[in-house]
Length: 311
Ligand code: GLN
Picture 1: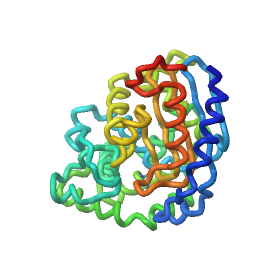
Picture 2: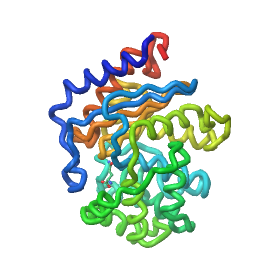
Picture 3: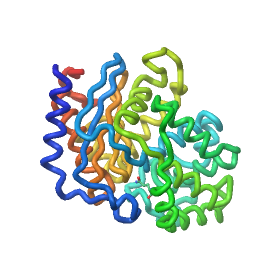
Picture 4: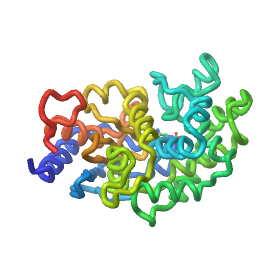
């Protein structure tokens, strides 16, 4: 199978279907992004890689960072402690919903929603880890030492962040946080505002797909139990309240962010990433979704595909 051809076709297919996408309006700096941008990368465990479109354009990780703060917290503080703070259940609500903190439990239902990631950020801050520690982890997981913070997006997140602050203050009030609400939000805003491209995310996804061992060096970077936890949560909660739809139509563990990125893992074989800033009503990138849906269909990537996987 000519994977490069299929990827080129996937980008064409997506480009014809994304005109309704709108860049995230609630973070003014993200609203400036051109919703017609579209790019993708596949990074294979066997060392090959394939790119198409705006694959090397920088965009902010946004919610994809939630997988990385989770990995850090699991590795540094342990599974038991982390899951005493947040749960592992999908919410069925939007990623920035506050409602269940009040009506169900002060502990966020999972680490892939804003409240959960803010609680995880508080655990890291409370244990003495800084944004620099986070950034170094991102650089290591993506395999690029020049990854940096996008200052303008960070400042914009801070300005537009009162909904996140409201959740953090509620959790601080209920003794869920390990540091002050403002400090937890600051790490969270910065983590969301790190610039990456699709190759960075595809390489990170490949590491997850390979259960935490770098396929090029054979070195273990993430504990395999942690990769199992993260991928499971990506399946059930990674696409917010569209996780079921995505599981049905694409069938890969995936995580999206309102910067327009989606990364997905193909077990033991590859990391995939696609990017387009135009979002649907649930905050998922329309173009990136269609790239992944096309690849899944044409290459039989769905975890329950009856056909032999073609890559
Ligand atoms: N920084 C964004 C926010 O807090 C991240 C949300 C997302 O990517 N879904 O709203």
